[in-house]
Image (cartoon, rainbow over all chains, first blue to last red; front, side):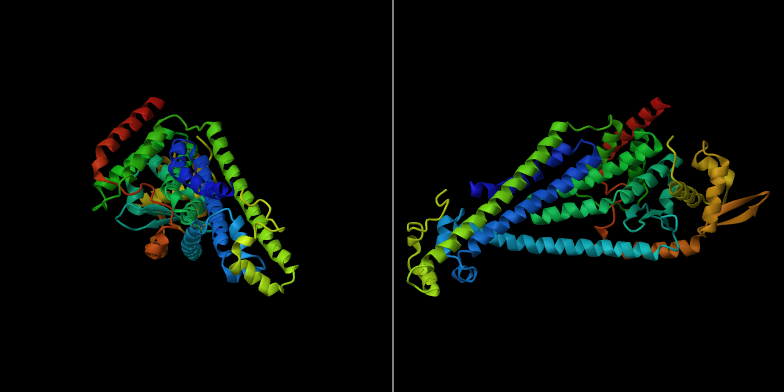
Length: 343
Length: 124
């Protein structure tokens, strides 16, 4: 039962990575971005905690650790919900995942720190938030900061008509107003916590672009004009840009998806899908917490196994050694029966 | 059409001035921005941009013609762009308006663009 609870977060991550991007693909993008990012982070944290618990089950069986923690390694082993080999694999995975998460978080924080600093330096020269590059390339992106900046090349501005220009500015401003860089970072961290969540990264990216598209449509009052602006800028980039770098698969289809979505009626997602996702996250979190509590019970039992033996004739230290090494099987049978053993 | 926040209008006016290849009068800015917008609103925004030091104006007959202040702005802008071009920072910058493209799908793109145009004309 406990092992099942410990493996549940891994299962949830697999489902979340494989299924949820598809479920939410055509949903309202702001909701999709939140569910993907926060749900992904929750699933990632659950899986991290469960790896931690499994790893602990391995460490707790090492004689040195058992001695330090004043419990019996053998008693722990007897009551442990997982075998040593599974626990060892989990411990190794925990190490890898911890390094990856620390690395990703550090890099993100550093990168965002740099864009914030760049925006601060621009404060005097671009009080409007719009930064125009005097360049012959078609550039348009948003730089997060307080406040953030919209960077556009003069060439692109000159080639757009007035509606397209407004769509472009509204789209980039929506990225900044809604702190989209933190969603990007959240998805990257979730993927670092559990590689099964990697598909969330492009899914969140698409949701954020769609979110900004919908925000632009609200501002200019037409969804089809946003679609047209997207198509026009794409055409410009194909024909004007001297060399469009060959793209990975799926990137063009992202643009097609965004245009398609703006031509279709406004998106909806069934409430039951949202409810099921939230419920699955809550169940997993509860199961992980339950597994943690169970691990505590097992540790306490292993601890009382030591004190039980200590109450006999042997001095504490000798008893610990006897318990841990000389007679590992004696633990489960004596008067100090471990509660829940064999469950 | 939805009302725009002051900051939004400032950026839109500035974008119009940058897009033009010559200084524009307030009337021209109004036409290029949104003919429904009041002339006084455009004038207010232009004055505010002038005070912020991002545009400059010159006499054009009986009125003023406005243009973006290039020297100051582009220097800083290019510095920022160069700074963010460093690979490790790129992931923190929010994606290009239209991401990378593959010429293979130009056909599909043209179809969607046609559809968008026809939907747009229906709405008029």
